[in-house]
Length: 237
Image 1 (cartoon, rainbow, N blue to C red):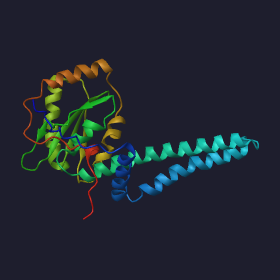
Image 2: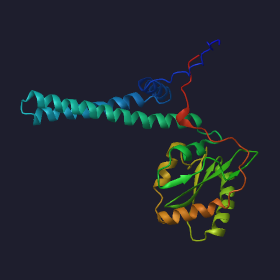
Image 3: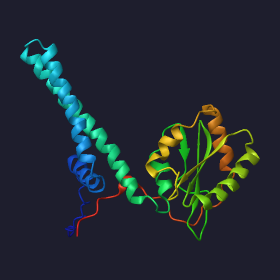
Image 4: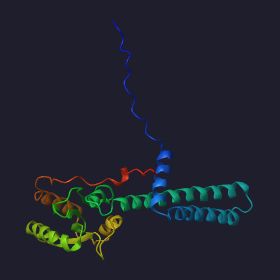
């Protein structure tokens, strides 16, 4: 019998961890001109502290001095990586800010454990692409308007009446993300939710979420939110 000499095509090899970090760094530097200096400062401060502690506490012991300096360098690398992660997330959100579905991307990828939200909006204006998203957590129900505040406020009021119809004792808060003054920047949505005063227990949050599921109808005919963590840096022309 003739052997099958055809080989199955290999999957493209994914970039290594260092290459991924380098790509993230380049993307962040392109959209955040201050990222490099902040990372350098975050690295330098622990190193300086390590050197000072080595001189003060090592007492002339070479091994002790090396260990303190090494600890400072490792702490500096860790600080620089943490800063890179946060600035990269902000740069990624900056690229999609103002696009339909941007709030859904935040609710899907950046919410803390005490909050849950869907990447799909609960109300959409087909003409203007304004949308309202819902998040549920210890602070109650939050309706997040995406688009012009003057237009989304009416949509939020309609959704609040629906919520209060079945959950009259649950607090409902409005957040607006858009071009108007006084709105919340896209990357600050998770932090804004975290600042809302807790009023519900964890079992109550689950019960509220289950009750609100009954309000959901068929999926809205709009594309899903953008995933900023999967975005790749644009190549220069």
